Image (cartoon, rainbow, N blue to C red; front, top):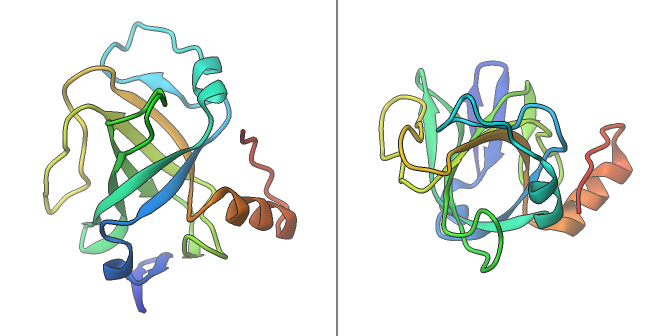
Length: 159
């Protein structure tokens, strides 16, 4: 296990253990969701809420300004609204977080059809549609999220 220091944010995971593995994305309810590919479009969160959580395969972790801040994944859940889309998950809260016990309840998400590529900067999904922006929680499973909610004062609406 390595501790990845990110200023006031610490993502505490064994990166190598997660590359190629599935993790669960649970979209955060309501506010903050939009279509990045069409700024004029309104986004009804109901289909995202109804679709619920989805599993995504970790492709890589990324650093921003020399500090690890998140991961790039691809959704692998047949029939899900996000199936086969890429997801950039950027950790947005201070603290020590992992995918099992100390979850970060605010990953900013960019979700779209094109691989954001490898850069030395924060990866962005800049073209293709649909291209969603929102937020959510990343964990190993629904059971992990349920346990985390039971232990904390953070309430996260999920499926």
